[in-house]
Length: 323
Image (cartoon, rainbow, N blue to C red; front, side, top):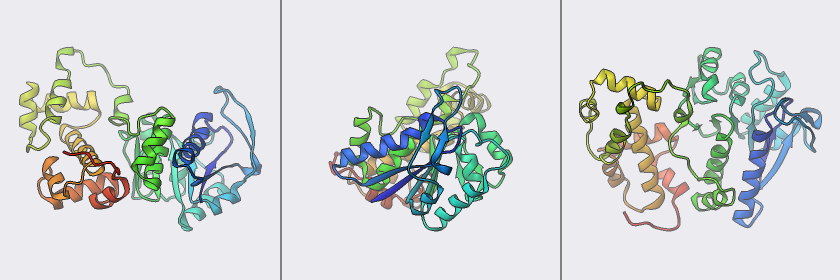
């Protein structure tokens, strides 16, 4: 049985504290077997949740020692997340769990606690967009990406704010049990298995003054031409803008550049094809506009953390959909 330890520290956000238990417990129900054992772990076995969010006191049967037995440790946001220092026993317990082979997953500003261990150094990570700049300032060795809902580095996973805890936990269920069981879990909790887009859609950007410059038609046009070798000139021509204006509007409306948006969209389409069809990887590369299989593997692995073949083996739906 897979032991999931939820780290409960004083000031924990109640929603983030409860989501892992809800998702992994529902996954047990969807799978028809107890794959996960869920333990809420608190120093002294007691925790007081965040003030102003329906504060309550919680007593649990597990303390920090349980992290030594966990296969997965989830680190929700808590009252001390943004402090310059973190309790040494907590950091030591997290490092020991990682050394033993446990995967560590942070939610929202729980990333600050995970980063304080040093384990995120040299890796991409995300947190709530509001605090991404601060995370990057405090931990310059971490490559902070404020646009992602979650980032999977194998044993280290980070997620954006609050509701992204659902995305994160469903992703972990899909890694553990496959796409079919994850989809069944998502249906039971009335949640999409994968939300469209990234965190950038929630970042507060100034509204473009000229509403006629909305990029939606151009985004749809780009999605319909993933197989083509689109250039910045092509995209700017369709949007009837200069390249400089295109980059500015793209950054304001999507939080990224035109070519990075196109690359992420191609990766998402490739994930869909790998999950739902049996077509060869070489053809997936062609269908999604990557061209050479080696180029496809390079970009896909960088964005998902696994090769296309490994992704298909983990997430391929048992129901084949023709392309």
